[in-house]
Length: 128
Image (cartoon, rainbow, N blue to C red):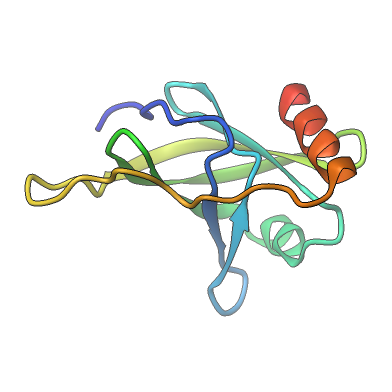
């Protein structure tokens, strides 16, 4: 896989960081910004940010409808945005998890239960 595939808006990914014991968290704002660039937002209080500041290497796994299944490995660059920290991952390697023996029909299904949180998420995603 030479470049990132497309995935549906609102896809949940899993961000894995190091700088100590492996640490994984779900991320809901993942946006493709080019063939090898992913951006997403994290709350300033996330432990993952401290880890990325210490060691910018990370992995982001995405499993989504349309048979999207991959892990992107790269280095994170952090920049402050309104209410969040923008994380830009320049992807160095893409591991394709698709196989002829199965297909990904759907990713994680979720929705906001708080209207203010929904509006905030939409605003953040649009700013990325």
